Length: 258
Image 1 (cartoon, rainbow, N blue to C red):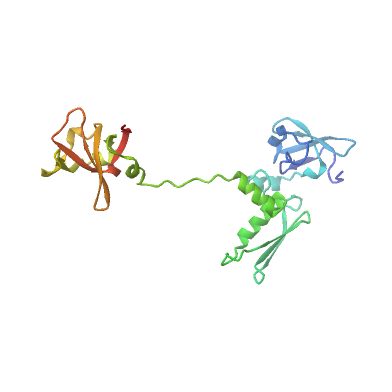
Image 2: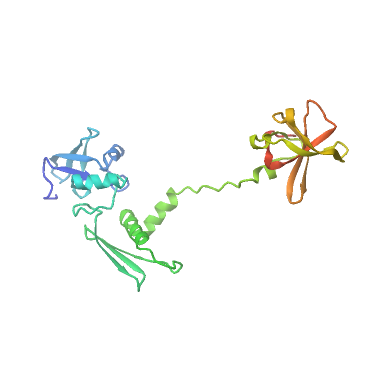
């Protein structure tokens, strides 16, 4: 039992122990980082504490707890981290006591207030070691227990967002037989070259779509011209004697053709 903590003291639990001990139950997650009041001690040395914010009471192992300080709590809130913040208060479990930088060996050693020491060495592919990154890595390793455990957490918890291929979706999906409409950007200046239904250029060279600008049109052909993908379209409800020649980036599919 920690003699520094006694009945009636205010304490705090900085992190979850759900994966470590059966004494920790899921409802205790809501008490992490919250102010706790020590109610009573068991014969086994554990503390029965009440969370002021939630009103719940749970048993905590003594090594999970530390004295609650207003200074440490305010710094924790300011950092935006309610679990295991980097603190300057000497009573904080994950507080940093000293940081030793060794540029020659490309190593940074972090000594924590609880006596734990973590040494981080820059990889061979790192041109200029960054002490901020090294200290951040040390805190992560201290939190996870080891470098491998930290890598495992990162691997399991990371979701990679795939970049959108801007400007290529329409190029590869619009096909002859699709029904399309002009995009809003294309409707502002709806003047496009045209060709007659027999494939010859239209006599006027460029034709203003005008009333057809917001109508659904049928793609009759998709071709490559001067490095651009061009779609020839007309209005199905009123078959015209010419087709509009529109770059595919100015079109959006409303229905796929068969």
